[in-house]
Image (cartoon, rainbow, N blue to C red; front, side):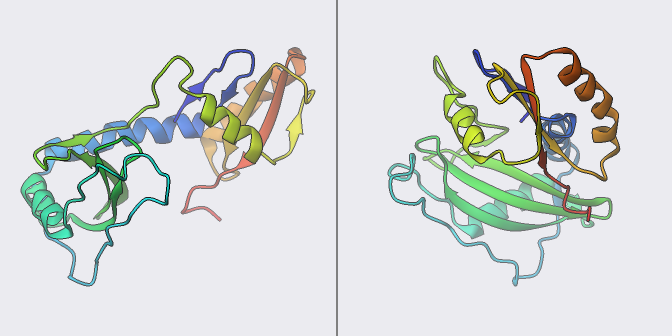
Length: 205
């Protein structure tokens, strides 16, 4: 996630969303490179291989890896660090046809980190990172969904050609730092509408 600008009607995420996105892209490769393994959590931590809902893309050709194979992969990948453990939270077909999507929660003394990777149909490769929509108008579906779901307090004209959606956390210091800039933007540019969408981090009240 980050800031995306769409033709004639733009939607941007808050500074917090950008930071979460950057952290996701940076932390996972660092974990993969620096950690060579971990103790597996007790057998009570089980994930269920899910099927897509009817009509979802990718469900027809995706071959889902078993939880046993995913655990073996994680043991080989994360290696020696016994302070790191994990829980497989979901194995399901990806929206990208032919790929299986695997969600894992990594736990270590410093905290908990989510990790997502994709497995190819032949089971020989895992792709770490984010799958982006593609095409001449790749973000139209996201824009339409956003228009339907934003319901927070707003400032600026409803007919403004640019809408900025701030996914904010009232306990986030970075959101606080961004606030003067957003206030200035809506005060000085009458072509901008700002919507505040409450989006607290899990550790905040």
